[in-house]
Length: 456
Image (cartoon, rainbow, N blue to C red):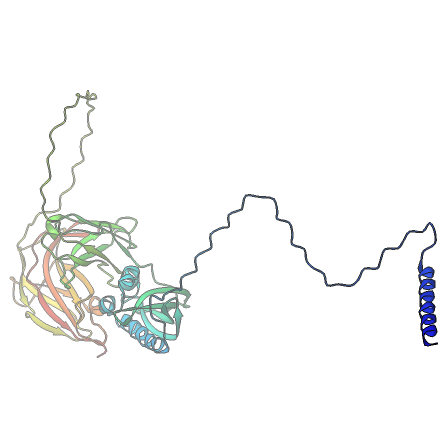
């Protein structure tokens, strides 16, 4: 019985299976549907290798930028504080007229080149001069220190003439901060009218060599006025002053022959030019003087045979215009009688000198000339000038003549706050052109006069 039941169950299950299969079979003539795709993880196919192509070369990689190495140590707050003191002393010395000290100790080598005109010209003069200055602040500037300043310029006897803004640039040299440049900013004129333009000097031969010709030019003087010129050597020594009249444009050119400078020391020289009647109108220019070259033998070459070149027909030359010669020495040097070889004068005293006349009477265009050159304690010439006369009688009798420089002439020779050291002498001059005088005698001996300060 159990076996019959088992076979019936199997037959029933088979029947159910066949019926189910028959229900899922598609009708006749219908395509059999494709089996449904089963979900499976996508597998990336490896791409086919591309066709062979010429590879494009890549540009070379740029080398890494080198790390900038500072050439100077960074500017510190201590440097900024120190620079304020350096600039304050720099302007104070310029205001006191100590330009030589400034030029030699306060400037870098580059600063000496760039500031020659400023330090020796505009700021070294007694007129105009720095009468007030203010240091405003300091800041780093591309490895240097920039200090903003302002100063006031004053013209003697006229008052303030303007206010100048500037930036002083300092650089390190041997561990010290020195002035490397001065950039001038805005200039505000004062209410008073400005003084006449300042003269300007030029060295036409630079560098020069002792024993060779040196030429200079000055401009900015008045037409026909007499200009006093001289050379200042590196040790402060001065050559004999020369006098020359400016042309119609206020300019003059001067030549020193090689014999006038032969044997003088090389170095940095200064050529000075100053109006004779107004010592405030002066200018100076620095220039380099090199040692004379060592004599060397010049190699000789054998002559080269050349075909003769026919000469052009000679043309007559115009007759040369004779160059006028300066007057020859006509008189001996005057012999000084008074004052003593060393004397002094108080403000506002005049200087009267006495001497033995060189002749009973001078010619109509001949005069005695008293020359006075004054220097400060540093040896800088701060004023020079001369007066001329026929020679006045003096108390010593007919064998005595005198020349007086009055108080008006002496006004600018008495300095402020220091004693001036004046050197004076007498010579005979002849007027060779309107306002131009040429010595016709050797100068007398030189004597000194101490010029007491007007405001001690």
